[in-house]
Amino acid sequence: SAQIADLQQKLLDADNGDRAKQRWDSIATILEAKCALKYLLGELVSSKVQESKLQSSLEQGKATCSDVQKMLIEERNHVTELEAEFQNQLVMQEQQHQEKV
Image (cartoon, rainbow, N blue to C red; front, side, top):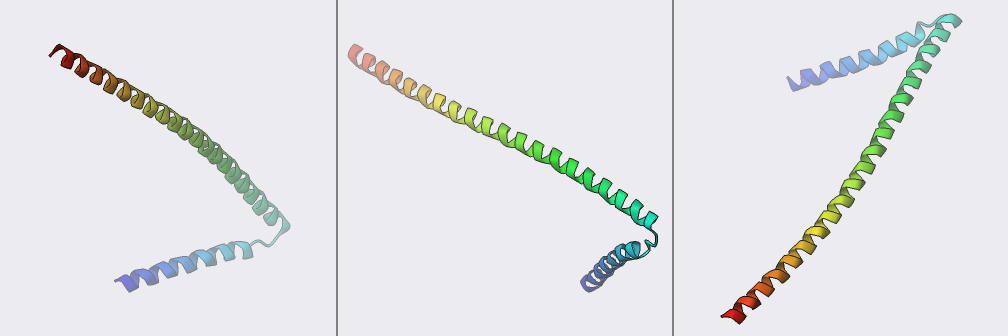
């Protein structure tokens, strides 16, 4: 069954390649070529617009990620400072307790 599936996929791929070639071969007049080029240029423009939007979205995502990383570093530093302060207070309270005892 794996061989059958592989053969079916190869037939589909070959058929798709033949269809594209047949489409180009079927263009017989300048008017048909003009329409085909107009369509292809429209598809190209559409693809470029979509690529531009995706690129912009990617750049925005990178900027957001950078901002979040900066905030994370700041928060880690803040937590480290709080931990150090807490440890100092703990040491001071232990010393006060020892003095009382």
